[in-house]
Image (cartoon, rainbow, N blue to C red; front, side):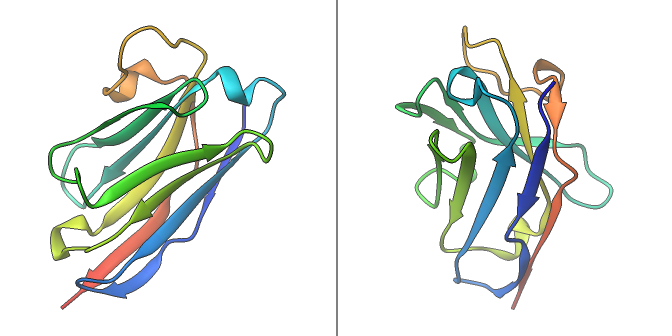
Length: 125
């Protein structure tokens, strides 16, 4: 069983930056695939970024590529999502997710077994 707790959300002006954190329980964090998703009101949960193994392999949604960076500190059992150049359309609840499977990129919500409670990110003009 893995428990995930997100933090770092908040209100930021367009063009600003935020860093989300996802603290994970469990001893095998380094071997898990970690992902970030987001869900805006009235929309489906969508993929943002994922990191496999120790973090060297990453994949991003086109909408955030070049602006967001996923990273992880395995010694702290923590994953991060650095968000730069934020846009109004980035407003959403952001969720981190984890799964023990590491084969192939996991970009769909159903591919993750564990989820955090979410943290709100609001980008204002």
